[in-house]
Image (cartoon, rainbow, N blue to C red; front, side, top):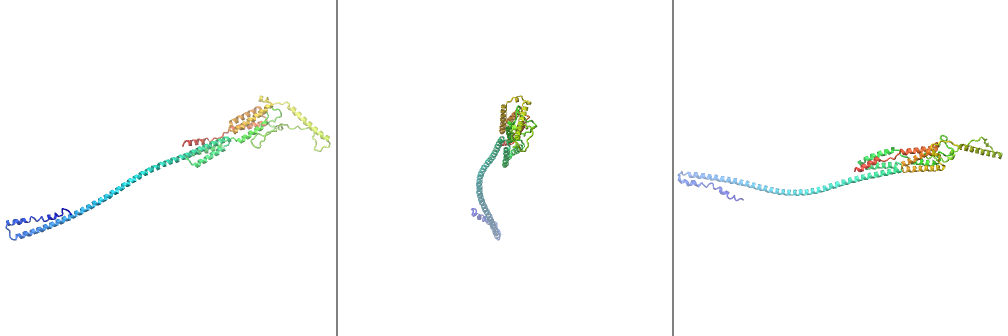
Length: 406
């Protein structure tokens, strides 16, 4: 098995080699005859001992060799196992390294996809925010347009109902939108609605009707220098001009100004049937002369009339000028009516002021019709002066702030 193996037996017999040396020295010294036997037996025992020692040494060497061979084989086996394990480990390491590289590649791809998803998410959030803001901005613009349109309708019609309806609709739309940044607008709408409910607004139809009544009564207003019987304050209470439907124009001026008929002192004919035609003719003539006498006496009393004139120019007013004066007053009243319908309350107040001045200057202020007309004109001027159409200022301001805060 090993090149050292054949040399091991040659070493064992080398030990008894010095044995012949004593035999060579034997003739030099004489010994008894039994001495050679004893020395020969001692050498044999030495040879046997040497053989035994050699055998033991050989056995020990064999055992040592066997153990060394076992150790060598074990080391070789372990070395082979370690080599195989290291090879397997290298294979596993290579596989792990390949898997790590693959995982790194997948991780890189996943990171790229994650970055893309994050970018898409941010873009989507920005788009949604833009859409939400755009929807809110559109809502704010729609509400502002609706309120301004309702305000124009309120100015044209003189009624606050279009404005109230627009504010209530805007409140409902904001409630459905559920946007926190529109809460100030909702609170402003509530305050404007409360303020409009508490505001005093001109009743345009009622005022227009009263102006029409004044136009119809202009011809019945007596001027200061008018000739004829006059109805003084306290003699007959005229019904004032009102806006109600029961007010009827009193155009029968001649009938109103006629004095009560004078009572006749002649005996009144009985209701019995007239037997004689002469008696019937006598009664007719009597009634005729009584009427003639009454007319003559009344005309005589009206020939001279004393009255106080505070405005000298009113006494110089000719009858044909009185007609044009009344027509001018009618035009003034119609202008005031148009100004009221056009919501130009300043122009309407100016016309009513001119009418009031004309009534005080040219007409008899003691007549019931003139007094009622002056009261109506004063009342209309007060209503127009103390009334102004409400405006949704707080709501429009809140909408402007909401539109600017986007």
